[in-house]
Amino acid sequence: MRQHVTKLFSVLIICVLVTFCKSIEPSSSGEKALYPFVKDEQVGFLDDQLNTEITAQFKFLDGKVWPYTFSEGLAAVNFFGRVGYVNEDGKIKIDPKFDYAAPFRNGLALVRNNGQYGFINQSGDYVIKPQFWMAKSFHDGRAAVQKQKGGKWGYINRDGEYIIPLTLNGAKNFSNGYAAVQTPEHNEWGYIDTNGNTIIEPKYRKSKSFAEGLSPVLLDFKQWGYINENGAIILEAQFLEAAPFSEDKAAVAMPMDKNDLQKKKFGYINKRGSFIIKPQFDKAYSFKNGRARVKMDGKFGYIDTEGNLIANAIYDQAWDFDGKFALVKLDNKFGYINKQGIFVLEPIS
Image (cartoon, rainbow, N blue to C red; front, side, top):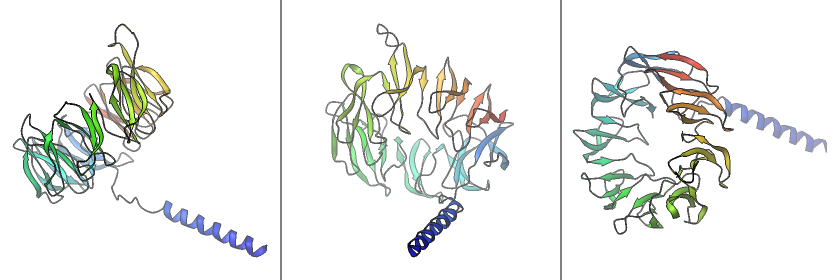
C-alpha cells in the first residue's frame, strides 16, 4: 500500500513539474503582440503593455491595409502611397513597391502591383508573378483567382498551378478543406474539396464558409439556415441573415415586423438554433476572444458572451479584440479599450 501511495505521489509531482515547465515556455508562434497607434498622422506600434515598441514613422492611410497588423513577423505598412513590409524592430524588410499588400499566411502574401495580383515570399520575391485581376489569400493550400475582370474563377496551388480551372462564377476561401463555389450551370452554390471534387451539390442561392462544422446557406423563402459538412440541414430556414459560427455562437437577424422585413434585429444563436442573446442590435459581428462588436444607431459597441454591453455603442468604427485590446475610432481619433470596455489608450490622432 505504501509503495502504491509513493508511486502515486511521484506521478503527481512529475505532472506538476511538466505543467509548470509548459507554463513558462515561450509562445510557439514566437510573435510579439504589437498594436498600431496613430500620432500626428504617423503610425507606430505599442507592445502589450502599451509602451512604444516602434516609434510613429509610417504614413497613416485609412484604407484596405489599415489597421497595420503583424503576421509571421512582418506588417504591411504604407510609405507615401506605396506598401511594403517592416519587421518587429520597425526596419524595412520588403521595399514599398506594391499598391496593396495582405498579411502573410504560411510564408506567402497576396500583393497587387500595377493593378494585378500575385504572391511574394518573406524575402519579397515573387513566387507567383502578378497576373490576376482579382485574387484571395491562400487557405488550405489553395487561393481563389480571377484572371480577367468579370471572368471565371478558379484555384491555384502555392506553385501557381491551376488545381481547379477557371470555370466558376464565384469562389470563396477554403475552410476545413471545403470551399463554397458558384457553378455556371444554374448559378447556384455548392461545396468542393481542395481537389475540386463536389462534396455538396450546388443547389443554394447563396452560401457562406464552413466554421465549427456548420455553414449558413440560403434556403426556402429567401431565409437562411445551416447545413453540416454532409449537406444535411441542421437548422431550418428561418433567419433573414446569418453568419458562420464562431466560439459556438452565430450572429443572425430576425424580422421585427412581419409586414416589413427591412425592420430586423440581430442576435446570437447556439448550435441548436436557440437564441442565447436575443435580437436587439442593428448589426452584429462574430465573437472573437470572448467579445463581439455590435452596431446600434450607426455606432459601434461591444458585448460579452452574455449579451451585456461592456462598451456602449459610441464609436465611429471598431475592430475585433486582438488579445487584450480592441482598436476603436472616435471623432477621427484612434484608441484602445480593454475587455471591460475601459480606455487603456485614449483616442489620439
